[in-house]
Image 1: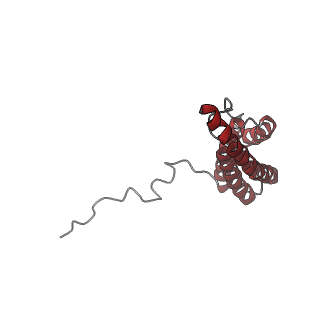
Image 2: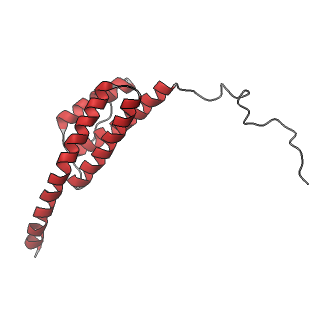
Image 3: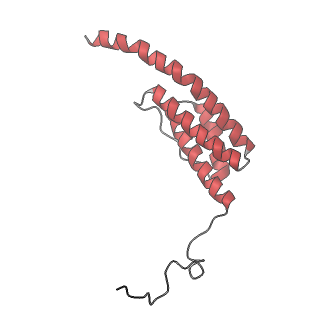
Length: 139
């Protein structure tokens, strides 16, 4: 009913061991951490937090070996949403930094988490208090 396999499998690891680039666990964690920090940097730049962005950019440059691209500036995204996004990204960076024992990034990520956790409710209440005045002005 079934025909026997007559050729060797293309998935045999011994035959194709050198076909793909391999990274060590540390290199993979560096790549992952640099990605999380670069995403955090983009959100930080959107919020207009220059000093915090500079500190994050230093760590990305250290991990990648070159300075990161910086975001142009503020966008139309609401601040509470950006703070929640930045908090989540800093949390991801903290987890990876802890697993690779990078104390400098772990401290930076924890500080950013604290800052965004504190700023999110303040930004939300500021947005809520300005909403009625915008509606009154529109009427």
